[in-house]
Image 1 (cartoon, helix red, strand yellow):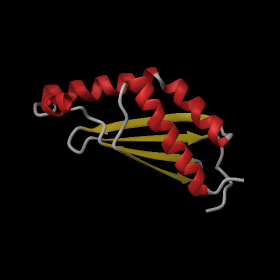
Image 2 (tube, rainbow, N blue to C red):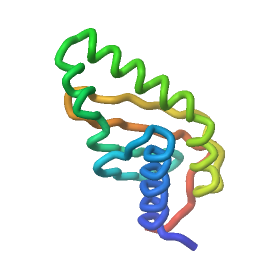
Image 3 (cartoon, rainbow, N blue to C red):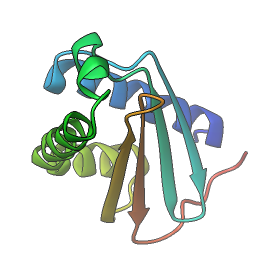
Image 4 (cartoon, rainbow, N blue to C red):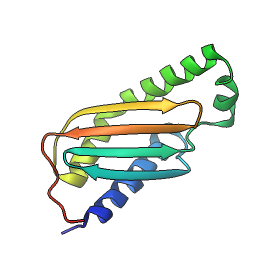
Length: 119
């Protein structure tokens, strides 16, 4: 039986690995929190130097947000399967956004039911 902290760490590691394999580079840091039926993941340091320069204009910022959202959406089934494999719970929806100011992405997975796990 895994503890909550161990499961959160496993999810963080798996997401980092997915980002490296699917997107070509991983975040600088990942923090996962499990709360009731939500898996909340914060990824820091995900923008490339070129993307940071593009984000200096509104048009560039919107372009980066759109492209990054499309990339995550194209891999959403893999992500949902990864969460199911680690938690044993079906993902009913996934929500994500990126901050072009801080270079952070948040991903929230809503699960069919809460995860019963000890802290």
